[in-house]
Length: 105
Image 1 (cartoon, rainbow, N blue to C red):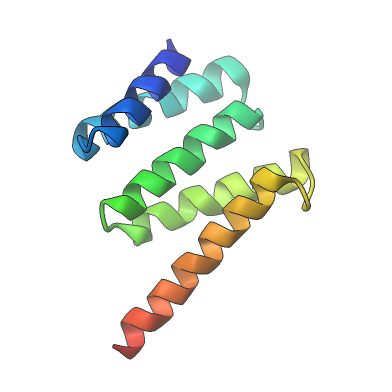
Image 2: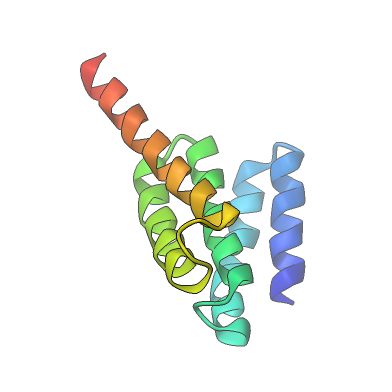
């Protein structure tokens, strides 16, 4: 069920239905944590996906803690050099750069 909700959420996002997508991804997050556990790689993909969606919706403040949580789990479980870990770290760096540019402009 949680994987299905996550996939549905991603499809809505691809179709541009961001609010509907966020609802599905929000619903999938606790199910993923309950079924797979909070440190499972699929759970971190859900956190990361929701954070990306929030960025797409223009809400980097809400995205930041999800990216941070996904990064902490990925560093611990997958290691600091794993491609998923690197991608999440890069997303956080981009958020920080965007916040700096917003403060300047």
